[in-house]
Length: 378
Ligand code: SF4
Image (tube, rainbow, N blue to C red):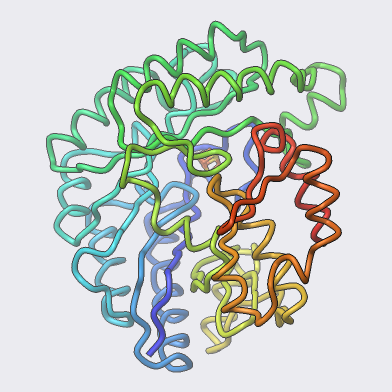
Protein backbone atom coordinates (compact mmCIF):
# COMPACT_ATOMS: atom_id res chain seq x y z
CA UNK A 1 0.00 0.00 0.00
CA UNK A 2 1.31 3.40 -0.95
CA UNK A 3 0.43 6.48 1.10
CA UNK A 4 1.08 9.60 -0.94
CA UNK A 5 -0.18 13.12 -1.55
CA UNK A 6 -2.53 13.25 -4.53
CA UNK A 7 -2.66 16.25 -6.87
CA UNK A 8 -5.44 16.55 -9.45
CA UNK A 9 -5.26 19.19 -12.16
CA UNK A 10 -8.50 20.76 -13.41
CA UNK A 11 -7.54 22.92 -16.39
CA UNK A 12 -10.67 24.99 -16.84
CA UNK A 13 -10.92 28.78 -16.50
CA UNK A 14 -13.55 31.32 -17.41
CA UNK A 15 -10.95 33.36 -19.25
CA UNK A 16 -7.18 33.39 -19.46
CA UNK A 17 -5.45 35.92 -17.18
CA UNK A 18 -2.85 38.03 -19.00
CA UNK A 19 0.09 36.71 -16.96
CA UNK A 20 -0.88 33.04 -16.88
CA UNK A 21 1.27 30.22 -18.26
CA UNK A 22 -0.45 27.43 -16.34
CA UNK A 23 -2.03 24.58 -18.26
CA UNK A 24 -5.55 25.98 -18.44
CA UNK A 25 -8.16 26.48 -21.11
CA UNK A 26 -10.87 29.12 -21.27
CA UNK A 27 -14.51 28.67 -22.15
CA UNK A 28 -14.71 24.86 -22.24
CA UNK A 29 -18.17 23.38 -22.73
CA UNK A 30 -19.88 21.16 -20.16
CA UNK A 31 -19.35 18.24 -22.54
CA UNK A 32 -15.60 18.92 -22.67
CA UNK A 33 -15.49 18.95 -18.87
CA UNK A 34 -17.39 15.65 -18.69
CA UNK A 35 -14.97 14.09 -21.17
CA UNK A 36 -12.06 15.31 -19.07
CA UNK A 37 -13.51 13.74 -15.93
CA UNK A 38 -13.75 10.43 -17.79
CA UNK A 39 -10.08 10.71 -18.75
CA UNK A 40 -9.16 11.44 -15.12
CA UNK A 41 -11.08 8.33 -14.08
CA UNK A 42 -9.12 6.28 -16.60
CA UNK A 43 -5.81 7.69 -15.33
CA UNK A 44 -6.75 7.00 -11.70
CA UNK A 45 -7.70 3.44 -12.67
CA UNK A 46 -4.31 2.81 -14.30
CA UNK A 47 -2.43 4.06 -11.24
CA UNK A 48 -4.63 2.03 -8.97
CA UNK A 49 -3.63 -1.08 -10.94
CA UNK A 50 0.09 -0.23 -10.77
CA UNK A 51 0.20 0.90 -7.17
CA UNK A 52 -2.36 -1.30 -5.48
CA UNK A 53 -4.16 0.30 -2.53
CA UNK A 54 -3.10 3.93 -2.93
CA UNK A 55 -4.05 5.90 0.15
CA UNK A 56 -4.14 9.70 0.10
CA UNK A 57 -1.97 11.47 2.65
CA UNK A 58 -3.54 14.67 1.35
CA UNK A 59 -5.55 15.66 -1.70
CA UNK A 60 -5.13 18.88 -3.64
CA UNK A 61 -7.35 19.99 -6.51
CA UNK A 62 -5.50 22.66 -8.47
CA UNK A 63 -5.74 24.29 -11.83
CA UNK A 64 -6.92 26.06 -13.75
CA UNK A 65 -9.96 26.72 -11.67
CA UNK A 66 -11.43 23.51 -10.22
CA UNK A 67 -14.52 25.46 -9.19
CA UNK A 68 -15.36 26.08 -12.87
CA UNK A 69 -16.90 22.60 -12.60
CA UNK A 70 -20.60 22.53 -11.72
CA UNK A 71 -21.70 21.26 -8.29
CA UNK A 72 -22.71 17.98 -9.94
CA UNK A 73 -19.34 17.61 -11.68
CA UNK A 74 -17.49 18.35 -8.41
CA UNK A 75 -19.49 15.56 -6.80
CA UNK A 76 -18.65 13.23 -9.73
CA UNK A 77 -14.97 14.05 -9.41
CA UNK A 78 -14.92 13.01 -5.75
CA UNK A 79 -16.81 9.83 -6.57
CA UNK A 80 -14.13 8.98 -9.14
CA UNK A 81 -11.29 9.72 -6.72
CA UNK A 82 -12.80 7.74 -3.87
CA UNK A 83 -13.57 4.83 -6.21
CA UNK A 84 -9.88 4.41 -6.96
CA UNK A 85 -8.05 5.77 -3.91
CA UNK A 86 -8.54 5.50 -0.17
CA UNK A 87 -9.10 8.98 1.21
CA UNK A 88 -9.08 8.61 5.01
CA UNK A 89 -11.47 10.87 6.91
CA UNK A 90 -9.82 14.06 8.10
CA UNK A 91 -6.88 14.23 5.67
CA UNK A 92 -6.25 17.72 4.29
CA UNK A 93 -8.34 18.18 1.13
CA UNK A 94 -7.72 21.50 -0.57
CA UNK A 95 -9.59 23.00 -3.48
CA UNK A 96 -8.26 25.99 -5.38
CA UNK A 97 -11.05 28.40 -6.20
CA UNK A 98 -11.46 31.79 -7.77
CA UNK A 99 -13.86 34.38 -6.42
CA UNK A 100 -16.80 34.58 -8.77
CA UNK A 101 -16.77 30.84 -9.58
CA UNK A 102 -18.26 29.62 -6.32
CA UNK A 103 -21.81 29.53 -5.02
CA UNK A 104 -23.47 28.02 -1.97
CA UNK A 105 -24.36 24.79 -3.77
CA UNK A 106 -20.77 24.12 -4.89
CA UNK A 107 -19.39 24.95 -1.44
CA UNK A 108 -21.90 22.62 0.21
CA UNK A 109 -20.96 19.77 -2.14
CA UNK A 110 -17.29 20.35 -1.40
CA UNK A 111 -17.88 20.28 2.35
CA UNK A 112 -20.03 17.16 2.04
CA UNK A 113 -17.32 15.21 0.22
CA UNK A 114 -14.75 16.11 2.88
CA UNK A 115 -13.04 19.16 1.43
CA UNK A 116 -11.71 21.07 4.44
CA UNK A 117 -9.43 23.72 2.96
CA UNK A 118 -10.07 26.41 0.39
CA UNK A 119 -7.30 28.22 -1.46
CA UNK A 120 -8.79 31.40 -2.85
CA UNK A 121 -7.09 33.21 -5.75
CA UNK A 122 -7.63 36.79 -4.63
CA UNK A 123 -4.42 38.28 -6.12
CA UNK A 124 -5.40 41.86 -5.21
CA UNK A 125 -8.11 43.91 -3.51
CA UNK A 126 -7.69 46.73 -6.03
CA UNK A 127 -10.14 46.99 -8.94
CA UNK A 128 -7.36 48.46 -11.06
CA UNK A 129 -4.89 45.61 -10.33
CA UNK A 130 -7.51 42.97 -11.06
CA UNK A 131 -8.34 44.57 -14.40
CA UNK A 132 -4.66 44.88 -15.30
CA UNK A 133 -4.17 41.17 -14.55
CA UNK A 134 -7.22 40.15 -16.57
CA UNK A 135 -8.92 38.54 -13.57
CA UNK A 136 -12.64 37.81 -13.85
CA UNK A 137 -13.58 38.95 -10.35
CA UNK A 138 -13.98 42.18 -8.40
CA UNK A 139 -12.95 42.90 -4.79
CA UNK A 140 -16.66 42.59 -3.89
CA UNK A 141 -16.62 39.00 -5.24
CA UNK A 142 -13.71 38.24 -2.90
CA UNK A 143 -15.66 39.38 0.17
CA UNK A 144 -18.86 37.60 -0.91
CA UNK A 145 -17.09 34.32 -1.66
CA UNK A 146 -15.08 34.45 1.53
CA UNK A 147 -18.15 35.07 3.70
CA UNK A 148 -20.11 32.34 1.94
CA UNK A 149 -17.27 29.85 2.46
CA UNK A 150 -17.19 30.67 6.19
CA UNK A 151 -20.99 30.32 6.44
CA UNK A 152 -20.84 26.92 4.78
CA UNK A 153 -18.24 25.82 7.31
CA UNK A 154 -14.80 26.26 5.79
CA UNK A 155 -12.57 26.77 8.81
CA UNK A 156 -9.30 26.74 6.89
CA UNK A 157 -8.95 29.30 4.12
CA UNK A 158 -5.81 30.39 2.33
CA UNK A 159 -5.65 33.57 0.25
CA UNK A 160 -3.29 33.99 -2.72
CA UNK A 161 -2.00 37.51 -3.34
CA UNK A 162 0.48 38.80 -5.91
CA UNK A 163 2.94 41.67 -5.59
CA UNK A 164 5.13 43.41 -8.13
CA UNK A 165 2.13 44.11 -10.37
CA UNK A 166 2.37 46.68 -13.17
CA UNK A 167 2.16 50.13 -11.63
CA UNK A 168 1.77 48.80 -8.09
CA UNK A 169 3.12 51.09 -5.37
CA UNK A 170 4.39 50.12 -1.95
CA UNK A 171 1.31 51.81 -0.52
CA UNK A 172 -0.95 49.77 -2.80
CA UNK A 173 0.70 46.54 -1.68
CA UNK A 174 0.45 47.51 2.00
CA UNK A 175 -3.25 48.18 1.51
CA UNK A 176 -3.70 44.70 0.00
CA UNK A 177 -1.93 43.07 2.92
CA UNK A 178 -4.01 45.04 5.42
CA UNK A 179 -7.25 43.99 3.73
CA UNK A 180 -6.16 40.37 3.58
CA UNK A 181 -5.30 40.29 7.28
CA UNK A 182 -8.62 41.95 8.18
CA UNK A 183 -10.39 38.89 6.75
CA UNK A 184 -8.44 36.70 9.21
CA UNK A 185 -7.59 33.81 6.85
CA UNK A 186 -5.66 30.90 8.34
CA UNK A 187 -3.05 30.98 5.58
CA UNK A 188 -1.57 33.38 3.03
CA UNK A 189 0.42 32.55 -0.11
CA UNK A 190 2.17 35.59 -1.57
CA UNK A 191 3.97 35.55 -4.89
CA UNK A 192 5.81 38.06 -6.98
CA UNK A 193 4.41 38.39 -10.50
CA UNK A 194 6.77 36.78 -12.98
CA UNK A 195 6.58 37.61 -16.64
CA UNK A 196 6.36 34.22 -18.31
CA UNK A 197 7.21 33.47 -21.94
CA UNK A 198 4.25 33.25 -24.29
CA UNK A 199 1.85 35.28 -22.15
CA UNK A 200 0.23 38.58 -23.20
CA UNK A 201 2.37 40.29 -20.52
CA UNK A 202 5.56 38.92 -22.10
CA UNK A 203 4.47 40.37 -25.46
CA UNK A 204 3.87 43.76 -23.88
CA UNK A 205 7.36 43.68 -22.35
CA UNK A 206 8.91 42.67 -25.70
CA UNK A 207 7.12 45.54 -27.42
CA UNK A 208 8.27 48.03 -24.80
CA UNK A 209 4.73 48.62 -23.56
CA UNK A 210 5.27 47.14 -20.10
CA UNK A 211 8.28 47.63 -17.86
CA UNK A 212 9.60 44.76 -15.76
CA UNK A 213 9.06 45.45 -12.08
CA UNK A 214 12.02 46.86 -10.16
CA UNK A 215 13.69 44.08 -8.18
CA UNK A 216 14.71 46.53 -5.45
CA UNK A 217 11.10 47.52 -4.95
CA UNK A 218 10.02 43.87 -4.99
CA UNK A 219 12.62 43.04 -2.26
CA UNK A 220 11.27 45.87 -0.17
CA UNK A 221 7.70 44.61 -0.59
CA UNK A 222 8.79 41.10 0.35
CA UNK A 223 10.62 42.24 3.45
CA UNK A 224 7.75 44.44 4.63
CA UNK A 225 5.33 41.56 4.02
CA UNK A 226 7.23 39.20 6.26
CA UNK A 227 7.55 41.77 9.06
CA UNK A 228 3.91 42.88 8.80
CA UNK A 229 2.43 39.39 8.80
CA UNK A 230 4.56 38.21 11.70
CA UNK A 231 3.29 41.13 13.76
CA UNK A 232 -0.23 39.92 12.93
CA UNK A 233 0.40 36.40 14.19
CA UNK A 234 1.33 34.64 10.95
CA UNK A 235 4.38 32.40 10.95
CA UNK A 236 6.58 32.83 7.90
CA UNK A 237 7.23 29.12 7.31
CA UNK A 238 8.09 28.94 3.62
CA UNK A 239 9.59 31.48 1.23
CA UNK A 240 6.17 32.53 -0.08
CA UNK A 241 3.83 31.13 2.57
CA UNK A 242 2.55 32.34 5.93
CA UNK A 243 0.24 30.57 8.35
CA UNK A 244 -1.40 30.87 11.72
CA UNK A 245 0.16 28.31 14.10
CA UNK A 246 -0.78 24.77 13.05
CA UNK A 247 -2.28 25.88 9.72
CA UNK A 248 0.72 25.27 7.48
CA UNK A 249 -0.26 23.63 4.17
CA UNK A 250 0.14 19.87 4.60
CA UNK A 251 -0.03 18.96 0.92
CA UNK A 252 2.43 21.61 -0.28
CA UNK A 253 4.78 20.66 2.55
CA UNK A 254 5.14 17.23 0.88
CA UNK A 255 6.72 18.98 -2.10
CA UNK A 256 9.12 20.95 0.08
CA UNK A 257 10.08 17.82 2.01
CA UNK A 258 10.75 16.07 -1.31
CA UNK A 259 8.24 13.35 -0.57
CA UNK A 260 6.41 11.38 -3.24
CA UNK A 261 3.05 12.39 -4.67
CA UNK A 262 0.79 11.27 -7.43
CA UNK A 263 -0.19 13.85 -10.05
CA UNK A 264 -3.25 13.35 -12.21
CA UNK A 265 -4.54 15.46 -15.06
CA UNK A 266 -3.27 17.29 -18.12
CA UNK A 267 0.11 18.90 -17.45
CA UNK A 268 0.26 17.50 -13.91
CA UNK A 269 3.57 16.48 -12.38
CA UNK A 270 4.16 13.57 -10.03
CA UNK A 271 6.93 11.75 -8.16
CA UNK A 272 6.21 8.11 -7.50
CA UNK A 273 8.50 5.15 -6.77
CA UNK A 274 11.60 7.23 -7.42
CA UNK A 275 10.37 8.52 -10.81
CA UNK A 276 9.43 12.09 -11.57
CA UNK A 277 7.02 12.59 -14.42
CA UNK A 278 5.13 15.36 -16.15
CA UNK A 279 1.97 14.65 -18.11
CA UNK A 280 1.48 16.06 -21.57
CA UNK A 281 0.07 19.59 -21.59
CA UNK A 282 -1.90 18.86 -24.76
CA UNK A 283 -5.49 18.17 -23.78
CA UNK A 284 -6.31 16.12 -26.91
CA UNK A 285 -3.19 13.98 -26.57
CA UNK A 286 -3.86 13.51 -22.83
CA UNK A 287 -7.35 12.21 -23.49
CA UNK A 288 -6.41 10.13 -26.53
CA UNK A 289 -3.61 8.30 -24.66
CA UNK A 290 -5.92 7.47 -21.79
CA UNK A 291 -8.58 6.19 -24.17
CA UNK A 292 -5.92 3.76 -25.43
CA UNK A 293 -5.20 2.72 -21.86
CA UNK A 294 -1.80 4.45 -21.71
CA UNK A 295 -0.47 6.83 -19.09
CA UNK A 296 -0.14 10.35 -20.54
CA UNK A 297 3.38 10.99 -19.21
CA UNK A 298 5.41 13.19 -21.57
CA UNK A 299 8.52 13.32 -19.36
CA UNK A 300 9.67 10.52 -17.11
CA UNK A 301 12.92 10.68 -15.18
CA UNK A 302 14.24 8.21 -12.62
CA UNK A 303 15.70 10.30 -9.80
CA UNK A 304 19.09 8.91 -8.83
CA UNK A 305 20.40 9.45 -5.33
CA UNK A 306 22.73 12.34 -6.34
CA UNK A 307 19.83 14.35 -7.78
CA UNK A 308 17.45 13.32 -4.97
CA UNK A 309 19.90 14.77 -2.43
CA UNK A 310 20.23 18.05 -4.35
CA UNK A 311 16.45 18.29 -4.63
CA UNK A 312 16.04 17.62 -0.93
CA UNK A 313 18.37 20.54 -0.27
CA UNK A 314 16.86 23.14 -2.54
CA UNK A 315 13.26 22.16 -1.91
CA UNK A 316 13.83 21.90 1.84
CA UNK A 317 15.62 25.24 2.02
CA UNK A 318 12.35 26.85 0.90
CA UNK A 319 11.14 26.08 4.42
CA UNK A 320 12.36 28.65 6.92
CA UNK A 321 13.22 25.98 9.45
CA UNK A 322 15.42 24.45 6.75
CA UNK A 323 16.56 20.89 6.04
CA UNK A 324 16.71 18.42 8.92
CA UNK A 325 20.18 16.94 9.24
CA UNK A 326 18.81 13.80 10.88
CA UNK A 327 16.23 13.15 8.15
CA UNK A 328 18.83 13.72 5.42
CA UNK A 329 21.19 11.18 7.03
CA UNK A 330 18.39 8.67 7.50
CA UNK A 331 17.23 8.99 3.89
CA UNK A 332 20.61 9.00 2.11
CA UNK A 333 23.09 7.41 4.54
CA UNK A 334 25.44 10.40 4.45
CA UNK A 335 25.50 13.61 6.49
CA UNK A 336 24.72 16.97 4.86
CA UNK A 337 28.13 18.17 6.04
CA UNK A 338 29.95 15.30 4.33
CA UNK A 339 27.98 15.70 1.13
CA UNK A 340 27.89 19.48 0.83
CA UNK A 341 30.62 20.70 3.22
CA UNK A 342 32.29 23.07 0.73
CA UNK A 343 29.00 24.55 -0.50
CA UNK A 344 27.75 25.05 3.07
CA UNK A 345 30.96 26.83 4.08
CA UNK A 346 30.86 29.11 1.04
CA UNK A 347 27.20 30.05 1.57
CA UNK A 348 27.73 30.57 5.30
CA UNK A 349 30.69 32.87 4.59
CA UNK A 350 28.42 34.86 2.24
CA UNK A 351 25.84 35.13 5.02
CA UNK A 352 23.17 33.32 2.97
CA UNK A 353 22.96 30.09 4.97
CA UNK A 354 22.94 29.26 8.67
CA UNK A 355 23.49 26.00 10.50
CA UNK A 356 22.18 24.82 13.85
CA UNK A 357 22.77 21.48 15.57
CA UNK A 358 19.70 20.04 13.80
CA UNK A 359 19.07 22.04 10.61
CA UNK A 360 20.59 23.93 7.69
CA UNK A 361 18.49 26.96 6.71
CA UNK A 362 18.53 30.15 4.67
CA UNK A 363 19.32 33.37 6.52
CA UNK A 364 17.15 36.49 6.21
CA UNK A 365 19.63 37.73 3.62
CA UNK A 366 19.41 34.43 1.70
CA UNK A 367 15.61 34.39 1.51
CA UNK A 368 15.01 36.98 -1.23
CA UNK A 369 17.76 35.47 -3.42
CA UNK A 370 16.97 31.85 -2.65
CA UNK A 371 17.18 30.81 -6.31
CA UNK A 372 20.86 31.75 -6.42
CA UNK A 373 21.49 29.70 -3.28
CA UNK A 374 19.64 26.69 -4.71
CA UNK A 375 21.84 26.63 -7.81
CA UNK A 376 24.86 25.91 -5.61
CA UNK A 377 23.46 22.44 -4.85
CA UNK A 378 23.04 21.40 -8.48
S1 SF4 B 1 -7.43 31.78 -13.02
FE1 SF4 B 1 -5.37 30.97 -12.62
S2 SF4 B 1 -5.10 29.25 -14.01
FE2 SF4 B 1 -6.88 30.42 -14.72
S3 SF4 B 1 -6.07 31.79 -16.26
FE3 SF4 B 1 -6.06 32.91 -14.34
S4 SF4 B 1 -4.03 32.54 -13.45
FE4 SF4 B 1 -4.35 31.02 -15.08
